[in-house]
Image (cartoon, rainbow, N blue to C red; front, side, top):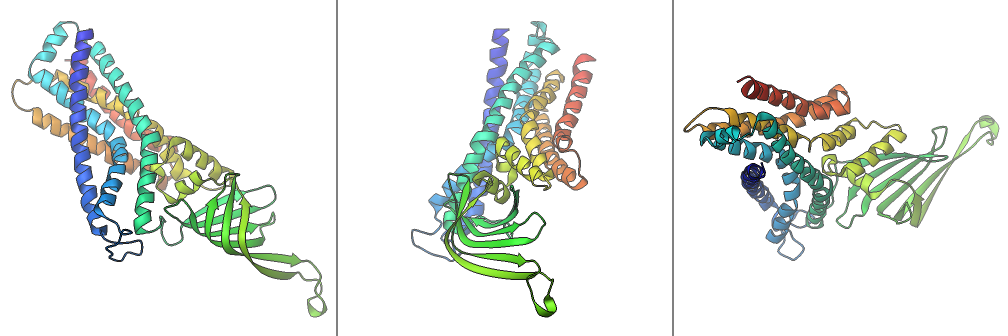
Length: 384
């Protein structure tokens, strides 16, 4: 059994590595072609020939930093295509028939492939939760250094926080390449919902003591004095507005740099822990977290799809053909992998629009393909 395991694992790993390198090279080429339009431009978007412009070496670094994100997306598809190719080739050369007569039954073959799939589950999780978020964040900051700040839309990101006595609504216009917030506005509300103050600052930094440092802005305070007016307005409330310039203003908050990154950057590029922390923050402040909950559960279930892929590939070893036809089966594996990737994204959007349970929207593609793979395994392996 050790020899059989070494044979199958060696063939499958080599095939998966070959498929992965091919896909990564294709994505690298497409990303690099897309970056060519920005060459020679500075942060203002104007053509420039100085050292502050976006050059080919920066584009190569940026595209290289995107490789871990592409690798995370490609692992299940590469596992499927590589395993299908090996299983179909073994069946074509009658090697798998010899293995079957040597004692490799369906249950043993399934156990072998599931063990290999478990390895890729761990690998996919490590890449998606540790390597890809760090590399993608570095890529975005690198591009922002030469092409401008990171932002979403015209209004930036909005966050909310409840504290002991007041609640706050925060607007962050953008993130700079130095991980500083730009165009920050902090709206402070009292317990009764009245506006207490508005603090504006062009630049804000994350401090080490759970606070933000807002620099060079203004603070507008609204004070309401009850029943102190005279004459015709006696008995009514009077408002007093005070505008002060601030050099440095410290605002204590639990909104961390990771939360701002989740709000500004793409949530699918964040780690599971960061998404979970941000979901708890949104829930505690009465905000909807449907989109981020779906992304969280996709982070949980997506690596498990490697197990589904190896089960889906096993029936190809029991197909009977002597010559030709292997290219068609590999092409079918490519189509199945692409359809899984597309369906995984579509179910996320549908679940968000239809307000499905987040775990169901994330797990539905994997459950569907698991049912298909088990059905194919039962029909081709157990009944034939």
